[in-house]
Length: 411
Image (cartoon, rainbow, N blue to C red; front, top):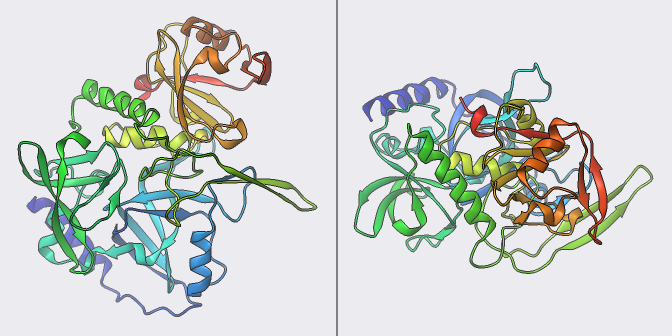
């Protein structure tokens, strides 16, 4: 732990050599990178740069994000960061910061070096680490291995959403907390207190917590499979599809709304749901896999489908198809949750009429695919992957699809 405090202290001294410049509503300050911690349950990260810096503009920019759109648009949500996640701030203006998220990779071409995702988020959702007391640095979760892997304090991960009794904050599943003390049925965990710029403690029931071992790959994979299954079958509703979403704080039961926006250049379908909060919680197909792997401490960091395509190895004649392997079609990934019978878990988009995380038998939505051998043979023989239409007949087909190893691709 002394090593962690020392490294953090060195980083904070280095990055605070130049004072943070006070910003006005039009100025973007390019500064040395600074570490910051997320102080809200989850926050949207946007891939588009701001065109104004007024408070009114920023409020509208982050509150008007729909669940999904059929075309790339000004609403694009790149990602979501979770409570107590550490990010790197690279520049800032009066109300927003431009951040880099460690170990969340984008790869755009086969031989291109992958890079960490970057984007904009609200400044009020962060606390700079150089504003924390020196003693508080020892209570930072290090799940992203930014600083050290040598912490002696155990870290838990939430299986499902949980509302803290002490602060009434509803934390997302996949939130990480450092354990202060263990009791028979509960853990006492450190949670950031932004008003005091330090940490307080909160009670977390053991029934909703998991502790993934650092060096036990078999156990890590078991946790990964358990989480994917759990999130596909929550007790109360379902996890909605949110493009760029990587949080689970609420479950939905109702349907979704669809609006069509027409211009001379294109037609855009906008899909949305009713949420109690302005920031929408949910998962897309890629972050379903990423978030479960992060909880299990598996070294899988692909942010999107293209990156998964380049990062994972192909199934070949000699490799058996395993639970956890990934089916890729352009713009979408699915996880094989069971080999016999062949079941698939995915966060399906709204154009399919589903719009949430679901598990199905492969034969329920794939044409002429009933068994894992059907799937593997179709892939090895370069046959198209065909979806069933509403009448159960052959519908949309994909020639460019892949059957990818998950476990077999991990370092």
